[in-house]
Length: 448
Image (cartoon, rainbow, N blue to C red):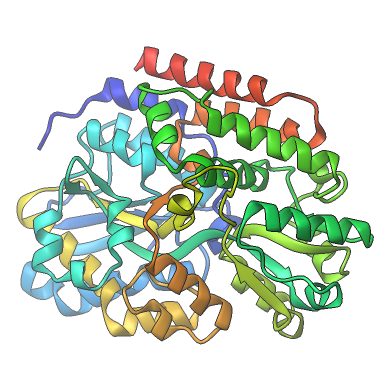
């Protein structure tokens, strides 16, 4: 195994504070850690850390562990032990464990920049061959595996859920004002202007935690220029002051001035449903957020949910090649990725455990519990019309970009979140937001 680089993990520790945009996980409400059978230093014990604290995530995460321990443990001599940690604390505890040389043998992550740090520090092993030998490349979406692929090698098995951004809207309000699903930014603005003229707020928005507003910023930047500018800014070959980021900030300022967002949105919490209440009361017509809201909205009211529609963030028709970027997803195709800090026989057995998540029974378990598993036939498995529409969109995606606040190092993510939030109250400029994010990124890269 590659020598562990604890200096690199010292940098990762700085980024282990928050997981703002993880609305898709139902385990976020618990502060406790739990273990299925305790910890052990035995070479025949495979330790597995995850965020499955509460159901349905706990039920799903435990499924493969139970299957392995019941069917394979006696022959192999290995036993899987799980430790489940509340997601807001998870990254921090994982990095502390790595820094002290106590990294678990298997662990879940959200891929992106943090996973790259784990790889560079020697705490994630390539599994490309094992993945193909098990036939998982024929089961999981290519876009899902791509999120955990670095330098041509796969370092994580995607599982659990598809969570991408999109616009939920009230079909009754659209019908009332003769509105259609917009396919371009200009058409979206026409829809919003009509709604404002009729006393309806276009977008419900709970931005007190900042990540929901970040989705607008990311969506606009992606539609304007694709992903090259963001990825160049991330690795230092480009800048967060590129035109696409200025465009995103300018649009948010323009839309805020025109009344497109819920009043007082920076003081409104999505965690306690204040944004959804604006939808339910028909004070707002749309909600731009993650696709996990299919489960949230339907759980709140199946009757109201039946009146909801969904469309992806529209194409930017203000640039010549906007259509080229219209099928890029923002979010995650997998939501949780299982990586491995072990080698040889232990790695093979740990990987065998993870293959149980791709069985028909486990995939059915996910679907029954409101998940959209990142498998090639996901659209055939789900029955909810909006979930089917989301699956079909993801299946045709040209690329996927993880949420900015999960992909970026924490110091950079915080600079982005703190400053972009001020756009919604017109307390800053696009240039100031871009400059603050770029400075944080430059400082991070200089330290690294």
